[in-house]
Length: 88
Image (cartoon, rainbow, N blue to C red; front, side, top):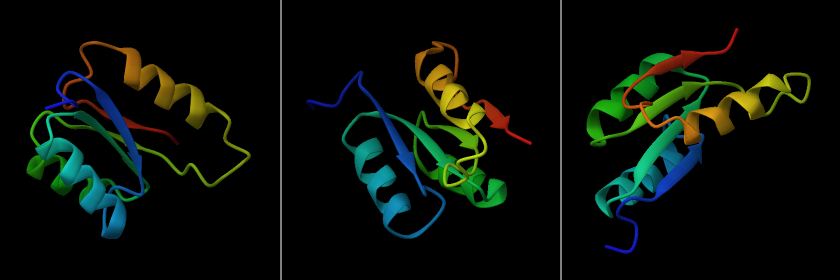
């Protein structure tokens, strides 16, 4: 697949359209970083998507600039396999 070896970052990945997109990307061979606020649901989605990783974060909060830096770091760190990273 054209997505093999590529990384996809999906926000809102714990449910709905975001979860569906994350599944489709994973099925197409992408390494998927799932981002959402709901940690239990993210863990459940991650268990369904081979090789995915999660970042628990609220990307809608403009006062939390650390979210962006943390997500960028997650994408580039090579050993980010199934790690859970929670932003307080």
